[in-house]
Every structure is written in C-alpha cells, then in structure tokens.
Image 1 (spheres, rainbow, N blue to C red):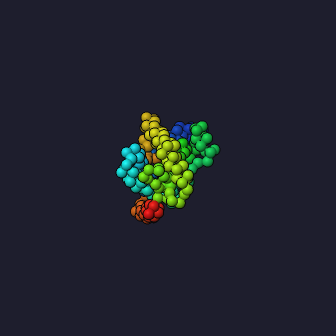
Image 2 (spheres, rainbow, N blue to C red; image 1 turned 90 degrees about the vertical axis):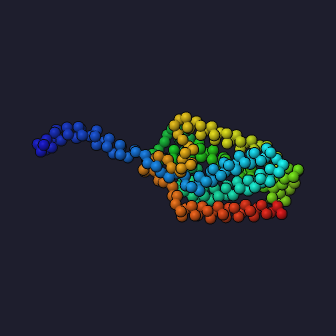
Image 3 (cartoon, rainbow, N blue to C red; image 1 turned 90 degrees about the horizontal axis):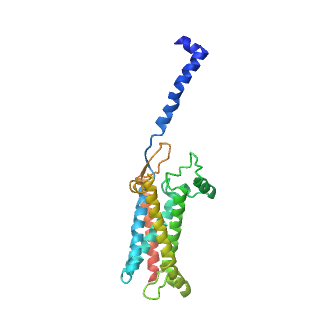
Length: 253
C-alpha cells in the first residue's frame, strides 16, 4: 500500500478510482429536503380569513336587501385584513415580506426564460408570476374596499366615508364597485384557482403549505420565524388595524 501511494501513477490511479465516490457523497447528503417553515401562522390565518370574507361579500352582494348590512361588515373585515397584510409585509415572516417576492422586471424575464440562479429561491415563497398575482389581488382589493367606503347606490346603502366626497365621486365609486371592480376581482380569483389546479397537476401542491406552513426544501433555505413572539406581534398589529376599521365605520354616524 505504501509503495502504491508513493508511486505517482499508483496515487493517481487510486484517486481516479475513488473520485466518483467522493464526488457523489456530498451531493447525496446535501439535497435531502427537510420541512421548512415558509408561511407563518399570521399569514396563513390572513389568507383563509380573506378567502372566506371574499366569498361572503360576493354572496351578500347578490342577495342584497338586509344582507347588505353583513356586506358592509365583511367589507370592514377585509379592510382590517388588508391593513394587517400591508404591515405584515414589512415586519412579518421571511417569506411573507414584500422584499422576498417583489421582483425587478429583469428578474421576472429571467424566470420566464428559465434562467434560474441558485440563490433565487423562486419556488420557496411566491415565484415571480405568483407574486404578480398576489400584488394585483392586493391592489384590486384595496381599490374595491376604498370605493365601497365612499360609494352611494342611491337606494339604501352608502359607505361610511361618503359624506367626505362629492355626489359625483360617490356615484362613480359605486359604479366601479358594483361593475368593473367586481368582475375584475372575480376574474383574478378564477385565474388564481386555475393556477392552483395547474400546479397541482404538475406535482406542486400550493394549498397544503398554506395550511401547515411548511414545505419540503433543502436545509440551506432560510425558514420563516414563527413563534409566540411573532404571533403576539401579529395580534397587536391586527388589533390596531381592527381599531382603524372600527373608527372608519363610526364616521357614518
């Protein structure tokens, strides 16, 4: 053995023989995925509460009449949730922050071309296309809630902030709220559902991580912080946002 190691050809032969084994060993050990927390509990609760509130708004709007009281209450709930999400997008878990999924146009183009880099983490939180959908949803919901707050249907329902705008503005807001805004939101929600189904058929489950909070990812992927301290902070933020919505609701009196 000593003669083999001392011989240049013998050492080279030993290295060439053992190289495939040592080359494959670290790769096998490093790619094993582990459950990593991606969506913290506040983000998951926001997502499902917003989903329920949205469909409740659609149903109460179609029923009309006395159901419009619940429509207004659900609208204030959505306002609370949106305000919370805007704050949580700055101070929330690692993958819930806007900084993790607001991509530059060049990055979006690179994603569409399949030019992924190791540090992109496109498939951890929201990929560039999913991020555009999320941002569009937030923007449309904010516009929809804002127009609802100042709307006037000239029948029996006015938003709590209607008295602060002109009659023409209130009527225009009501027209948007009940027509263009409503249909754009429904189309975006339908697109969101189609995307979930398509990803599911391609072997990517988007719903389960939004329920459990975890994804199977390489150990090198940083996990989102989700403990009692962060959940307590989220509760304080949510309480502040609810107080804001309640104050807005009282402007109608």
